[in-house]
Length: 96
Image (cartoon, rainbow, N blue to C red; front, side):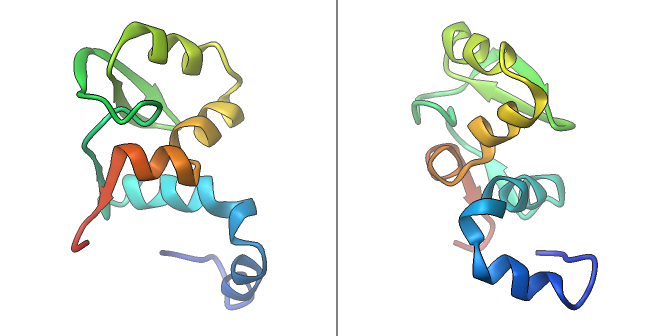
């Protein structure tokens, strides 16, 4: 994980839940994590559902899941796709 200054790691440690979605998003942007399943259901990916969330191409299992996310605001989309629960269902960190 990358931080902008020496104070950020301490701030992050104090409230990891607050920053989880952005931290997980960063793991995907930097190639440290890869999508394997739908972040909403953990189901098999459907390549026809690709959309961009926070500058990252993301797939879903169906158009219902894609629709739920694309209807949300940009900040909510990042939380929905990269929040800890969704991240755990859909992404794998390299080396784990």
